[in-house]
Image 1 (cartoon, one colour):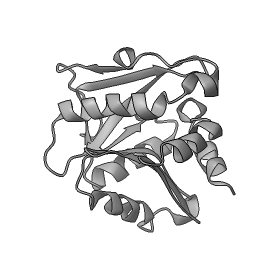
Image 2 (tube, helix red, strand yellow):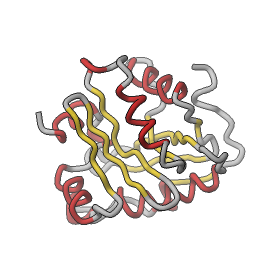
Image 3 (cartoon, helix red, strand yellow):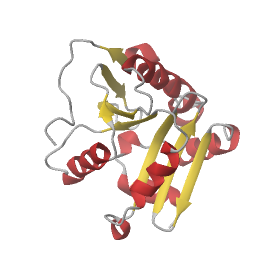
Length: 190
């Protein structure tokens, strides 16, 4: 199965970039955007000087629980930069969301509690709220994570969006917000 089909079957439509978008990032932004693919996994990520952003991490059902996800993250952690990713809030009807959050918590990721992220999907026209998780090897602040997410949004998520989707995503300041009063830690009770 083609790597894009693996991602497309696993991730919800509102989170998926088009195949053309991803292939263009791999080609035109090959300085920062990368694909690590194997028989049982697909890892799409952006590596910038200050941080790494995991766009998609897929491990096939056959290989789950065998340490493959851990090995992929360890490879990135060795670069000694903050690692950032977006996750869906817990959906009790989709047991994978809680498993995914528990996996990242075991891997040492924290919830960027002060960062709100909600983007209108060009595929469904509905607002898609996500949470930001991060791994900070040098106790980097949520402010750095916030700035890194803004950069990711502008360099990766909205790259040539009008060409690929016929419309532009919202400006970054409408999508990402800081709220120091937000207190609910997504990972606390897992």
